[in-house]
Length: 364
Image (cartoon, rainbow, N blue to C red; front, side, top):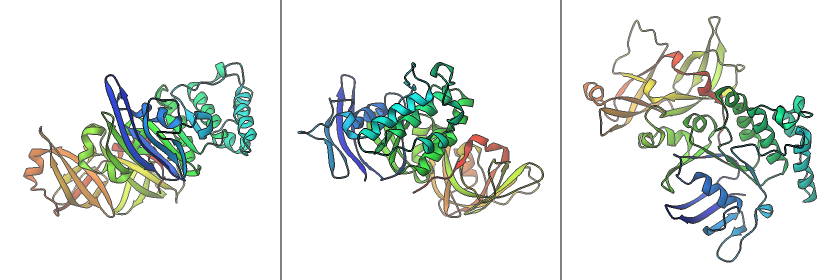
């Protein structure tokens, strides 16, 4: 069943007005700057904010409208906060068992062993909460939310307080959760890297309003999304299949428009992946260059050209069945005479794609 809402919430300095319907499964990222209303929306959906007007429903069940307000414990929502909020007097096993017992009282059947294994918690079960790293605490918090057998999982910037190694440790677990969970997940972040790696769909919030919404590949390849993402963070996501590894430390990925050669990817041949291509790392040429160090020279067709207010230009390029972006100067766009329909080449250095820009494939 889908989660649908059409709500408004007013503060003295801010007004939130959002309407949407989430798919029955998959991960939707709420993206936007601080103060755009992301966490406020999650609190409304969870029933933690009574000041909102409008309607929230899960399938045919109304959670709130002008006459009805279902409290949080009756909505069946799992909530993962920025900080883990574990019970400090219990060990890991105790924290997980608490959630599992509450679910059993409602007649649910939590899979304690399966959830613990999926999040790699087996070696930590007897460990006290103060002995856990930040990444380990967040994994326990996610497991505890799942063991409540939620109908909807809300995740409010779960990685924001972690350092880079801890984020790298936990991202594959969230990818696995995205692909395996049979419930809709709403994930709040202001990190474009997390958005590109995790999202099936994205809602971009600015000033309490939805500015752009849709499948992640569609939104990230739209030049109009660049201001919301930031010039340095803008870029598209490509689905790919790992074809092979080479003897010199590279990996060959099959994409709809040819092949990508990247630094070795930690996956087996045949694995389905998604690759984030930063717009500022893409070079455009009208003719195929020769004697060039870049290993990825791909035939593309210009589909959109958007000139910025400053010296920049955004070029949307069709690469096979997919779309990518290039961020170049207005002068270069004019010198190359770029326009929709023009055939050219997109050039990408292999080392321009970092390990963190390659993740497991997730899609509807």
